[in-house]
Each structure stands twice: as C-alpha cells, then as structure tokens.
Length: 94
Image 1 (cartoon, rainbow, N blue to C red):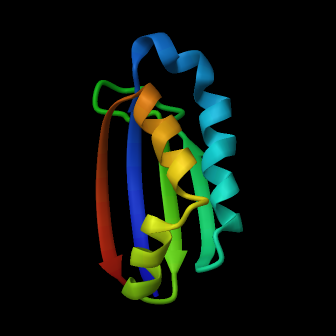
Image 2: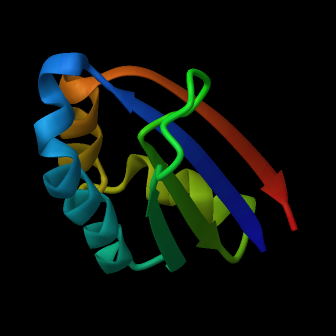
C-alpha cells in the first residue's frame, strides 16, 4: 500500500471555501487506482495548524504516480492551487 498525505493551508480570503475544497478532495475516490480517500478539517486552529488534511491510499507507488497524472485529479489540483497559501506532503510505502 502506498500512502499520500497532504496538508493544505488556505489563503485567508479563501477560508470560506473550506467545505467546497473538502468536497472536491473527497471526489478523488472516482479516480480508478485510488483505494481510499480521507479528508479532515482542522479543529484546533493553532498557529502551526493547516486547514485540511488529505490522505490517499493506492495499492502501489506506480498506482500513485498514475493517480497523480490522472485526468480526474487535475481539476482538483488546479482548484486547490488557486485557494491554497501553503501545502506540505509526505508519501510513503505502508
């Protein structure tokens, strides 16, 4: 299993779009090689918090790489880039 985790911090003027962003991220379940998607919204709101966490599981790294380039992923990526101030990712074999 290959896991992709991303944290997103929205631009201050885009914070009102957090639910829209979460729904778009949840739509990634339609990408064929994705086995599981989990989206979490930050509740603590500390100085080091990010607003949204995304976890995507694929069977293999090759499946993850195919997901990364998949046509259903691209519009979600473009939307997130338009509203995100900062992001961080960790990708690893489970």
